[in-house]
Image 1 (cartoon, helix red, strand yellow):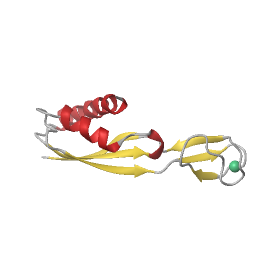
Image 2 (cartoon, protein in one colour):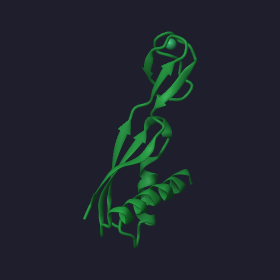
Image 3 (cartoon, rainbow, N blue to C red):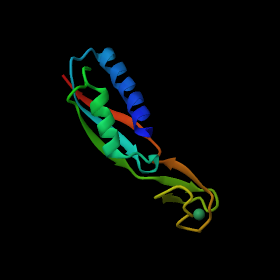
Image 4 (tube, rainbow, N blue to C red):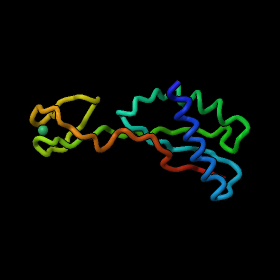
Length: 113
Ligand SMILES: [Zn+2]
């Protein structure tokens, strides 16, 4: 499952931070999810709950922050919203968009104790 491996890398980041700042409990994790990342939030949430058992992040809540997909058109130079890959440019109709935002999945911040 895609979400499970994603979750493992998220946990690695959390654990790294926890060691760095020496906290005893993670209360909440703010996760930025790009619209283009194709992440199933409920599956991610489920994997997270399973993986954090027995760690400092046990019982931590996840709050998702949606990040819209954006691209720059190589043809007309416009910056446009992108709902999915391989969409045409909304300004000129060309299929020469370079994604600049919306692929991320990252830990934005955490609430800790
Ligand atoms: Zn264009």
